[in-house]
Length: 208
Image 1 (cartoon, rainbow, N blue to C red):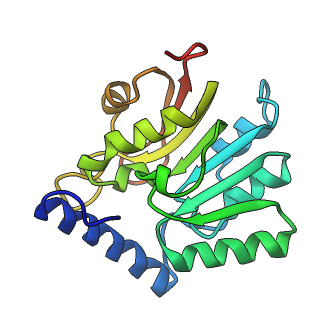
Image 2: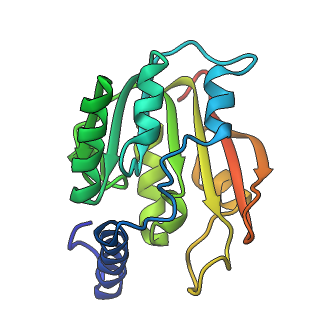
């Protein structure tokens, strides 16, 4: 994340980056289990699944899900803020023989990353819910500009209060407000000991 914004905003972004880098440095990111979640498998392989197209993963970690999508015919780009995670994701994709473009960058500043789109599928496994609130509109706008008509966003997020801070977490009402031109098609509670949710959003077929 960049140095732009108020001092408090810059400090918050630096804090988030430090926390993420610490998890990967210690080898214990709790969201990076190495197992593709069944919710993504159901979307890709289940009844009524979309034809493979172009996919963008936000906060890809070590690349487990990007590799999964590529193996199922998707043309995949993946972005993560942490350089160590990006290196591991590239190694994982190469070892799997999967055609995945993995880029290091800020998912709230996609214009700087080099992922022009359009994309038919976006996947976010607990990335958005950890983004400082002042950067979330930019996240939504970046996806909206890159979404093909009818594109889907599958997002896993922790609810407010899951962590010991005043701002992390995500709600259905927030997504309805921030994602103009999208329809919140489904909200399914997760199975974690703290409040979590799977959200499915669908881009309008005829965006303005």
